[in-house]
Image 1 (tube, rainbow, N blue to C red):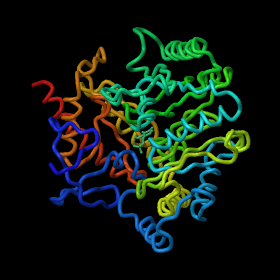
Image 2: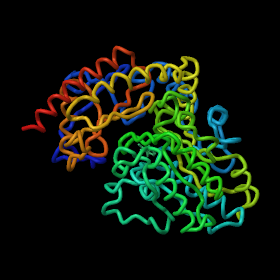
Image 3: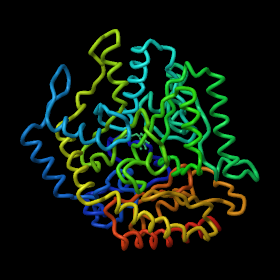
Image 4: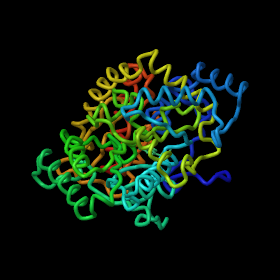
Length: 444
Ligand code: PLP
């Protein structure tokens, strides 16, 4: 089993798979078996494997400048170019960009930025953050505290209160609606709960509301129509910042540049980016904030001019070069428009499974989706534990496809953006076999 402590792995239920190489939308194991990567690694390998342009870019940058940091006035052109390109892409006004290494550390950075900013403008009591149930924001101590999934909390004794984390409803109609509640009534109820929470805590104590436009790791939850419109109206009314965690939904995944565009979220104050930012060829993340927040941090803080935060690898030049090339490829090859067209096809094909006796719901937008398996199709009763999801995941793997069971028994689909229609057909065909085998397993 090697000396590795593996992340989030249940060895009582899982066999190890040694992946050796990748090509396009496929990876190969150490026995040469080929797998369609239907989850783009961990929702990140947008341009697939063995992309020569990205490899050559990394190699050239390594030869030129393999490392330089961004502390104490040092910078480098490729980092500045990337920040400028990102700033022009995002819907955040006059965006300023802080580079990190992962989605988790980018969210930690944002928490510190929020505190720093509100301290700078004389409102230190405004530090709480509203995060949703069933959300995923990472695993560092602070990011895990924002995350709304109990397994990421259990036994870690996380400092929710010290961090000021408040919890509000997940916009998950399928799992969260009351009997006979319409989508509209559901939206009214949960947004009313949000407003009550703000009134109860006091708007003066709440800095931001964090949301994945479409949640990924907790089961691909697409909020109902009207949800974000109401949420934004409430946040605007009480002067609370919208913080979009676009670690999965950024860069074409939902069929638009950002999940914010797809879901009608206008001008978020903050945005977290990672994963597809570099197509996962290098680890890099970005914490993006509004320009006026940065100006206040620099001009008005007690330690004028210094934001005392940074990682050794903040703005790693090789990661910056690869990310910049990734963004250029997205633009040159019209990848977001392509994802919109292919995404529609993928959603249509996956909805063919709605009739299957094991399927409770198929949901998603663009090139991200989940098929939720249920114990009772009529009532939507969920399976206990993760055994059925794990079986389906393994069955897909046996047939040459990698996917992931998330939130118990939802099978996630998030293929590289470069997949073809024929590869989507292949994905559906393999899943169909795996689903039938899972059905027989459940009926046994
Ligand atoms: N935020 C979201 C929405 C994510 O989906 C993830 C990871 O899946 C993270 C943050 C954490 O990113 P990382 O795993 O790079 O720390």
